[in-house]
Image: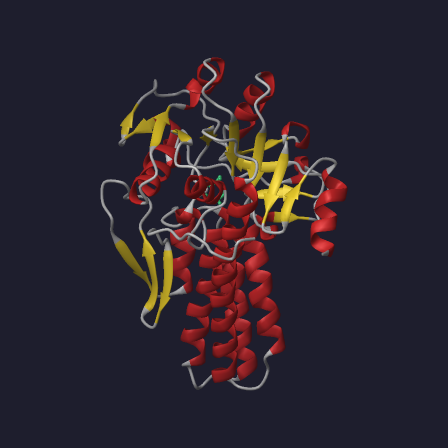
Length: 355
Ligand code: MRU
């Protein structure tokens, strides 16, 4: 590692004395607007409605939601310390009910829960310890992403065409990105790389968010629709695919935004290496393989409407899973902050955790 890192101008969330300042990702790229989230309930709504999204960012948002809960209950002096801890734990449980697939949320809430269990002295110390833990989760995510970027840049050939899906960038993390962290680090070394962003139906995270944050940071990017990846690879324009992850199981199977699996198959057919970039907090070593990953089903309106206009015949059926699972056999490497895991993943991922 060089120890000298790039940063991004883009930041999805920040803990302030008044609450959590959230960049409203549903309004981008048309409007750059911020919301002040003041309660755990507001944070749960923000996660559920995707004002904040992306696995690591959801984890950080969950941790900050617990801090907001602690701010509220530790100011209620009529409550005993045990009653406060119980109320905060119940808010953490509510935050856990928001989005099921990204394991970072449950990982971050478990970290907060451990602090909640440990600190039994007084409300002020409890609030301070929970705040420090949440800030640490945020800080360490940025550092992890910068290290992912450094490791990932080593697999990007000179002048490569890089295709990415959804948004696994600064917006989806503490502030640097996983797949886009690799792009940022590669671009810093070689400005001739070319980035292609899948539009990513139905929520358009690629078109709305990936293009916006790369343009903000001065990295040229070309937008393609999801059904263009085959033709793009046939034309020889893609040298490597890099995507993020919401949950990676112990054998390397990877849940990520719907359409990632299609992309892996097309990349496989064209001999294009397909990489997943994710911090260790996205790896669920307790889950042996991908078929057990809970896949979030979202509102059918996401696929039946565009700008609130119905785009299909009334009365049709809907299927709207937000994520799919790419089998490990299609993944050339999993780029983490501790290095790149290669197949067989059962061994290489376990080794990363033991170092
Ligand atoms: O539904 P979203 O927008 O939260 O889905 C985001 C993704 O699928 C990302 O690729 C993943 O969370 C990794 S973010 C670094």
